[in-house]
Image (cartoon, rainbow, N blue to C red; front, side, top):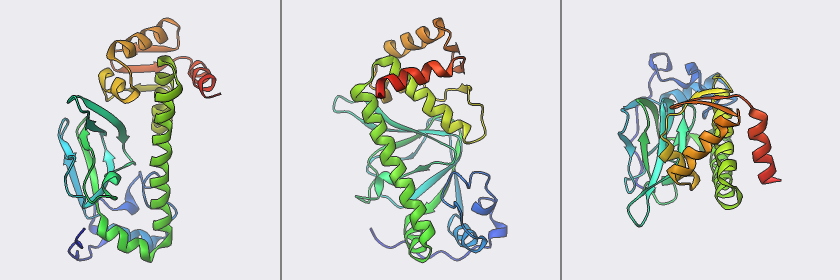
Length: 247
């Protein structure tokens, strides 16, 4: 990958996208940084990009130039299978990073599609590498983020390899609510940004199977389901399903 052009420093006070003033900073890159280190990072995160619902942030095969921190909104990543169908590979929300797939080959290996109107902070990778060499805390945090993605991928493999349909959906809902709770949202009420078909392709289930699982959870009093509005009535029941599968 060719070196990115140098970017003139920007005063942190003039940046509305500054990491130092972002309420998601605990969930993104600058965890535990000093004020001086945050100011240096602020000069790098100089661009915010809006992505409308249904539009792509990047496509498979696009040159890899930056990673993206989701500031608002919700995304899915997808690849196309040999028969032309879309395979969802992940869902990303505010405080999470997109674009790490392009590091190894300098090209993106998936599409990133906005599930609602969203905004991302653009972090040029060349500058991130340079700053990481100066601040070992930044390098360590970035490695933690990549490790977290690997662990998440392993979790999906476990879902697809050993769990029944109900157990897969229970694990998905628990993971989603845990991530939302870390952002200050309710641990038991959520609005699904993705369709049931997208959930199915992610979990390796047919649309009818996902719908049947939702219906069963509602009949059993585990969930209240009203279209995309979900309320978890019995979280222990979901945990028991998942623990029984992994145990």
